[in-house]
Figure (cartoon, rainbow, N blue to C red):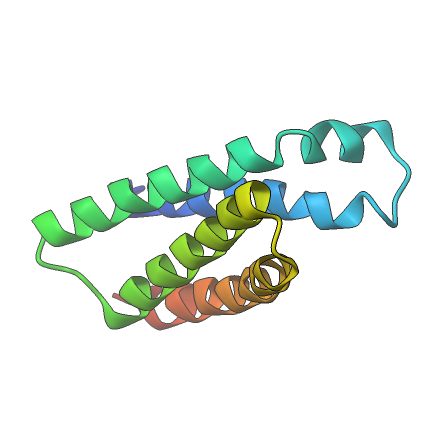
Length: 118
């Protein structure tokens, strides 16, 4: 049976991956990649918003997991550094945003693997 965990979790991964396409636009000349990359901020915000729904449901069911909490913090850090870079234009914020993206992806994978059997 498909649960709200699976639906919201799948949407988080989808939005996160769509947001990460922005990193490809420098290397791939494709109208599809450019179109997806132009919505980078929207996909990032949707991933964060959906993550809050996912966490809220987990809390309501008494199922909050440490890996999920770490993953949510990493996702929010990625977005925060991206937003700060967009407004402050400090190079270190861009570097932090670019580092936190892959870190967040690794944490997403760990969270999925460790909670797949639960």
